Image 1 (cartoon, one colour):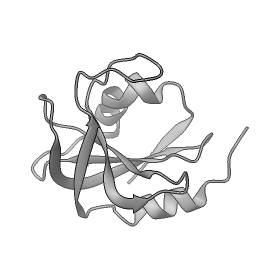
Image 2: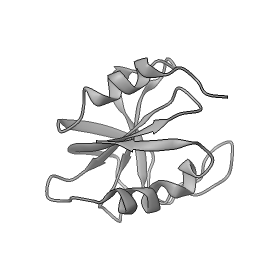
Image 3: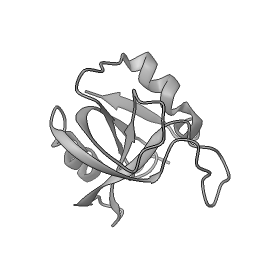
Image 4: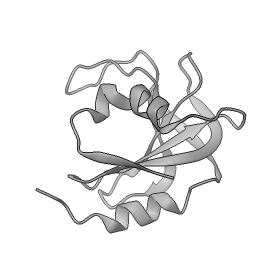
Length: 120
């Protein structure tokens, strides 16, 4: 079932190419509290930026291979979920550029369960 989630995508797209700060509630190597999988990248949220699901806007932080508590970076893309209203930002340090294939490989541990596209 396809969910109408243009609000989520429009909110996320407003951040493209901007510097943001992410707070990591699920740093690299941590375990998902409900589903038990391990986070292969740092995962967190933009504090105070509410997404349509009522939670802070989620973000993957790619290009760093150690657990973090907070970090700033540039929003490079949006993982736009077509089957739920919970899009994710893809953020990297300023000097790190990734292809769509590299992004897909990095976030597959979680996004494999959702129909999605990468929006730049």
